[in-house]
Length: 185
Length: 450
Image (cartoon, rainbow over the protein chains, first blue to last red):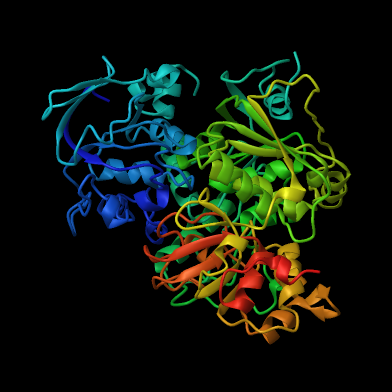
């Protein structure tokens, strides 16, 4: 995982659950099959109620219709991002759609672990609520070394929480790579 | 220093005398459970990381139990069952609960087995694991399902994990776990007849919020909890995840032990209890006599109201099912109200397991079998599975395919959870659901219970 992620921002609110990230009806695709895996990208964030999809205006698609990838590199969320089911398809879907990091006030624990252990997206906590500080389609620069995110439109820079021990797993690219690097496997 | 039951179980599995909240520890795992939604992805990662000829850490400690997308025409769902079947055979897994009525070349809608006793299929994992003897005090059970926290009802540490972690456990039998701080919820007083475990947990979630116990253990105790049967304890622990909890847990007592001794596949297990001097992040006490039948309004489990306050809310459907609301005693509660009455909105009955399906014929309320009561009341009864609890494929029994209002005994009501994005799901106990079914509006079950 590179240390600076630069790209477009998609803003979501509080309690975005895994059914919103990837609705249950698509879970019969097998993520281990490369031809099927890309469909998780197609349907990423498709369960968002339109009014809440891409704040502040809403009504924005995370991935263009019939596309497999979207334009958004970073999601800015509120509290309890990724709550609900344990489906690893959720961070996987975000990753397939081209997203590389989620910056939120807090994360549900299974989503957080899945994001890190599977090496899909970097889940980064912000002490300050950023939902109102970014608008969907703003450009951002997320620096995972300095632990800051900059809104390139407003030029404002926000300090993020240190990731702690899990940063080593993120840097390695997931729990298997981490375990191999540390001769645990 | 005193320890909680959760801390003691984790300590015993990582070879330490003591652990404390926040520590990361590598724990040995007693049981890994996976199903048809997360199993294929888990198996794919396992084979990729450990090799095509790799063996699982212990074929007797892995339970594969398809339950989510069973009665559907979705060809990928059928294919996923076959992936599990092939893996279970190749690995020599002792516990694979095969929906053997789905053939390898299945085409179209799956018909349920006419005799639930005539299949190795068991139904919803969280209700079937205890029934089939896989839950025991003192163990660590990890499952690729967020509601794996259900099994804390038996005094064990149980939590949900993802595919990658499950693949890691499949290969190594171990996983890193962060020791959670515990919140102790004490329910004082005798449990009133009109209340169910669902009311208690919806009350708690309404109070602390959907992230109120994030990363924490939720320990349930008190006189009212001790009086609950095993089904009700499962309902309570099942929904720990809806408050963000890592696990729910209840200290084993005679109720736990007599159930486990009758069913367990293993005789030996260890009973842990919290020390009097254990440290809690918080202790919250309730007088259950002051808790009212509860409803979680759309679209969040913490959107709490009492059933009494919602008496004007018109509904289109009632759904009684799932691992948190489709157990035998859930149906006994619903039957107490539906017996001799007629539903005025379409009402779906979905037993969690094949054993509960059989109970619909064996168990009587007011001298009449549950199945007869529900059929005479005008309910539609489906085969055991997760069914519409999580929406599922569009042809799923009971799925909300229109923007309707559903009173449901399931555990989650985020947008789109039961299907249509604009369907409103009102979570409630089986008593409240049954009262609402005969009223056509949300109804307080106290009107029907003397």
